[in-house]
Length: 282
Image 1 (cartoon, rainbow, N blue to C red):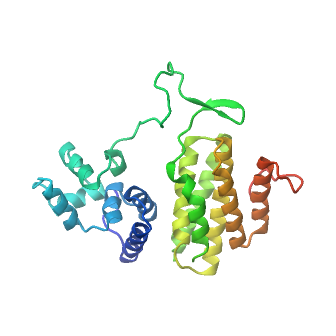
Image 2: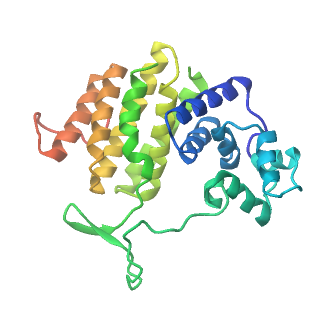
Image 3: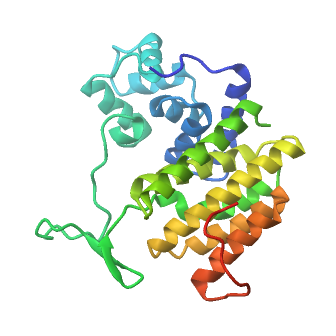
């Protein structure tokens, strides 16, 4: 079961984030995903906050659809994960939010990416990656917008020490998983993308210089590894992640990390300006 309530400070942070993203024209799905990462709450709860609604406002929306059986206590139990809505209630929630059940936290989306063949004979979709045929991986849609958003966050600048330590530990875990797998894989890629977004959100808030530098270092390391993973998948956005990571390393005051990212980028684009490329990130 998810947490039953949010501290007042975190509620304010979530409200400010949601309001800013709505003003920027972000869709509710993307705002809700950021809120889940920031606050650690269920997707269903995050969707309401992404809309900027109180529970009473959501309840009114449901009643306008003819559902008179729901009260605020039921909504609260659904949102904290204590109870699951019935099929009929879930259908009405999807109508209110104009989305799918899996995006509200119920079930999974097994839809193939557009262009996938339905007549593959069971072999599965494959793609050419740097001259080799490999199974196609689903690259999360928001990835292309993240490098620019990270650079924008780096130009602003709180985040608690606990959150900062959590983000650092999470990166070390993801780095270990990726190193152990030794290849581009959908799970580490999606996990790193979510972590990158969470770090970017944290960087967008005011904080002390020391904490900001620690966050920027996590951003540079995450972005560098995302660049490597995406390059292996033949995704052009990989170069944007390398470039954003160079900016983050400069903000962190870590020239060795910046050099590692720059050399990794150069080794893949053919723009070699230095000798040997370090095999591991600093």
